[in-house]
Image (cartoon, rainbow, N blue to C red; front, side):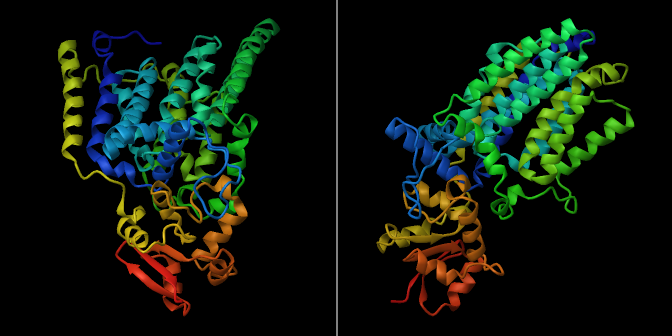
Length: 482
């Protein structure tokens, strides 16, 4: 690693400053972090766990398959969201989510600062945050990111020191596997770094030592990932979800990366490739495999972009440090003369400003597009809410949150690929799909609630056996004509 300048030694708080700045920025955005209907049912799940003192083993939220086996794989994230909501409502959820993202970017900055000067640390952190911004929501995939980032950073540190990671690092798999299914990616990265360590050794004795140390680490990490209420089923969950091809084609976040409409993620990919090609940076074989694997996942499913952004950023910096050590960078960012106490005071000042901003934002609430508040209130007043409903996919989370049994929601692993595809197809009036009228009859639906612009609304407007009960600019409720 390069010798730190006086400026660099005095600015080791850069990762902290970056993390706190990210927290404040996101806290100021407020409700923008609540624009996803899944947040509702994750809170409802966490609330259920806290009320029952157990993790659900069957579905408590639907009327179509009530009581069917259900593995709430992300239950720990749900509990965290439920607790933050219980403490300070939606403001609490925003603050907690902002803190997790700030911690994630701060850990990335800490990891990269061990190899690169602070100018590049700031650049990498900002680019990663901007590219990640379209996926920052109060959901498990964001809450688990500090665990993922710490895992990757400590693995990279271990490789740089030519050692195996500590067994304490392996134990990060316990919270990770109970928060989100991305733990499988973490195990994959560890396995490929272990292979890198093996082939870096020049003799059999060294390779045998790597097999023992890394092999034991991987074994402990794999066992730790099984420490969930669902055991092997929890371990298999990420692979089962990835195989639900028909369902994934209907969900926006699982669509392929679209270079016809360039965004932040596409920009990040292009920038990284430009740097690697222009500067002639050569990635070691196994790190190249990780990069290409994550890139492939992202090209297939936009939902995977955050793993490419943060994991790849950390994996390449030690290589850049070795191959780009003579690169010029600003010798100072103007911080060398600032007293550390002033820096600390600034950090706390940011935190206070963020807290005050959140206190002032009294209207923090999820998006109206996923929250049919008035429509559900009208249905409840009419005594409809306890009867079988056919709901929009985007309203499933809100109905669960309000304790209304749903037809379906985003828990695809519960409903299964065929059921999800059937419901999506019928509701969207897809060609060669089940007739929506048949679906209403088969499940004895007594009311429907869809978004004002949903295809199903246009169908029900013309359906002689159904009449409009309530309409606003968010949702439309229909009931049988009789």
